[in-house]
Length: 307
Ligand code: NAP
Image (cartoon, rainbow, N blue to C red; front, side, top):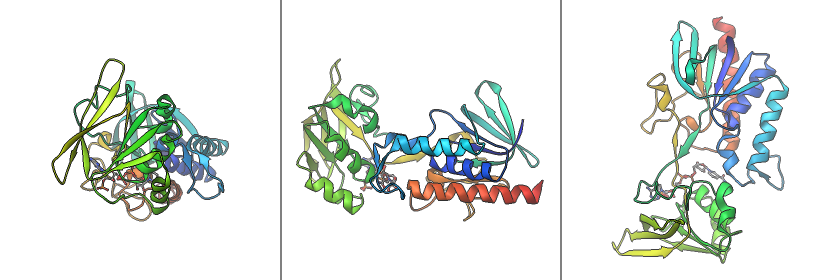
């Protein structure tokens, strides 16, 4: 089956690329390994995406993007891409169980996955107190004490969200200064349920057969060790790009993000990348959709010139 464009990854970048490609009347397929929407679906409330004056849930925004692209003819299937190979100008995309598709161009929009703390207890208590998604798991923690690890936008935004359920939310940050945008910092500081533990890193998570009951910390300045009693540990220490499956197909930067030019073109003709998987300074829904639109238009031009 030969497509004009195969898009790999169904977050905002992929869905927008699909929308633009379908409207350009390109035969377009989007392959997503889980549910469409990507990381946006793990965000409870989005209030910096233009057009939604009062904000919108991540799930609703993702659903709207998907419906809009499908309305114009984007095909979406569920599957995990395990290999991409080149046969001249044609790209072969192999899925699990040896199913494959061929394409004139590919847009890689596989996004990123949460970084792990890699400490004792993290794996053992995953799903039993350790979580990477407040939207998914927050409601289980009514009246509990929760630790949120990290100082970026994700940690602070999700800590604020978790105060809807928790008694106390501790933000554990390895420095004294948050990285999150100023408006989030102001809200967190004004929230009486949020307590900050500065200059500290988690060393161990402990619990029993019911779940987590403590997080053990080390002060990076004094070396002093301490423990807090918490039933939940939400980890937001950044993301790693989903590029392992590419196995050297396109050049990556030192942190394994895909390098593109301003048209989202990688150095491999006909292979584009967009959204969080791409090396770029600002990772937002607003920039992901811009990338997706640019990639689709560039793919259209590439096909016109090469086929
Ligand atoms: P991030 O900006 O990379 O922040 C990661 C945080 O975790 C930093 O505070 C970092 O500390 C800390 N950290 C990293 N490794 C650590 C470790 N091993 N132990 C302890 N702490 C560690 O990640 P993010 O907050 O997930 O955001 C990712 C991207 O998505 C950003 O571009 C962000 O702007 C965007 N985003 C935007 C929004 C929004 O607009 N509302 C919401 C979510 C995400 P340091 O500060 O010391 O490095």
